[in-house]
Amino acid sequence: MLVRDWMTREPLVVSPKTSVAEAIRTMREKRVRHLPVIKKDGSVVGVVTQSDLLQVSPSSATSLSVWEINYLLAKLRIRDAMTKKVIVVEEECPLEEAALVMAEHKIGCLPVVHGRRLVGIITETDLFTIFTEQLGARSMGVRLTLRVKDAKGELARLAGRIAELGGNIIRLTTLPGQEAGQGIVTVKIQDVSQEALIVGLSGIVEEVLDAREGRGWGAEGFSPYHWILEE
Image 1 (cartoon, rainbow, N blue to C red):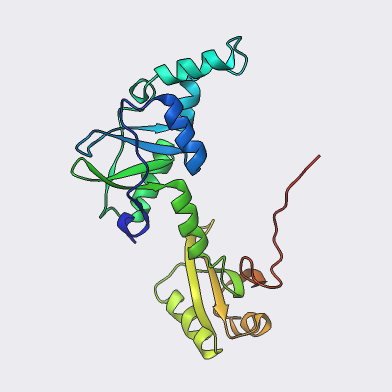
Image 2: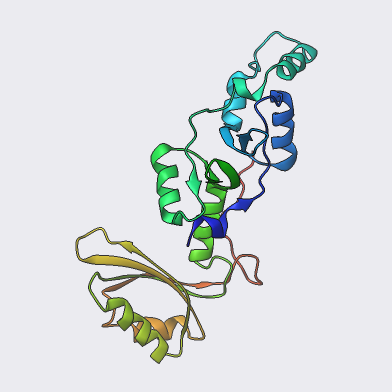
């Protein structure tokens, strides 16, 4: 997967001369947290985030009136708040590299450029969406987490046995195990029961760490594991 496949094309943007008040209004109305800053020719010169705007805005403890605060925000420009040293990526960047860059630099977005011209943006929200798709959060099926040997041919053996049991793999992801020589596989499977899978995979995997019916987000019978705490 490449950045071009998941980025937002034609994202909302601002110019260095845009007022901070207007940028705050845009973020609130459009429910975005990052705005690339571009010049008239479309080249990227910065990026501004909610945090950047909070830092230049008067504190909530200020003695200024609402009118005075609005006046100050209208006078401030994005060039006074934006991050000028911007990390960008190309459309052909592998998605995992973009995610690693964001994690390493603790940033929430990457403008996507062709040369210096903005062509899109990829954000942490996009990465969360990809993660949910990888694990099949919206799909029906049996969800298994398995510990397997980290060796050549093990995934092929696993997939072959699931096929023999009549199962259809709709999602499969792997992660390193806690110990050397081990891997963790999360797989969602349709057309075969949870009980048949657990029995049938005996001897193929080292351990079934978790097994549950995945109803799929929003599907009938879906039982969420999250809730809202209220006083």
